[in-house]
Image (cartoon, protein in one colour):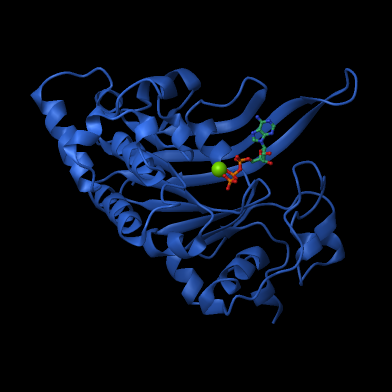
Length: 310
Ligand SMILES: Nc1ncnc2c1ncn2[C@@H]1O[C@H](COP(=O)(O)OP(=O)(O)OP(=O)(O)O)[C@@H](O)[C@H]1O
Ligand SMILES: [Mg+2]
């Protein structure tokens, strides 16, 4: 089956001014590759600042003016440049943005959902999608400032799924929602995937990611460190020490924390970005490039697979 989304060796950098007129390129995403097949939910998991939102914005051509992007993005087998992304955005490809401030403060919910479409059909779809997320029809006449945080979030999701997209980029879609509302949203993603859509589910919550996704891509400080199938977690087949640490930090791993913190962009120039925190670190891990390579049914960016050492 051909991927609906293919990201190959994506890097995103920002041009920044330092003291005086000195400029530097700050690379915040490096060599990021992933694919999403139709019918699949792929989770992108990483802690705050690892580059998850930038990935979504890069795919959709929504990066700020001082950003530059290398690598390639294919949608349905064809390059997705910013112009094509703009044409497909909100239709075939939809974004559930991380912040509720993406709602237009001067437009009612109904007008934002209909996006200029008129007629009985769109009105019916709006009613249905709002009801699905537990929102009354009257919500359509409200302005964003009249919505609670949870309602605003459900409106954003309603807007993203209204046009039956083929690819959904959901950037932290459920924080602040009660378990029932979050479950409803994830259930709907699963249903849309069953209908053939691809879903890129962006979250910092590995536990949540594992409840719904087929595959998990783990980001660390702007780099993909591992791609694993959801079943690899419980079966102890994880390949990268950071993914293993994330797994052990969950309740089932007895909340074992790993010391240290993810480096800021540009802080570590060479070698493995996780090396300072890695229990298996060797001299060769701290210099040169660490290739992202296939391992079993997944991918890993690690010179030493701890399982192989035993
Ligand atoms: N416009 C910008 N200029 C410079 N650096 C930026 C810009 N936008 C984001 N960054 C940096 O890029 C990195 C990744 O940011 P991003 O928003 O993608 O993180 P994230 O994984 O989505 O985090 P969170 O979980 O908090 O949403 C961060 O270090 C951030 O400071
Ligand atoms: Mg984010």
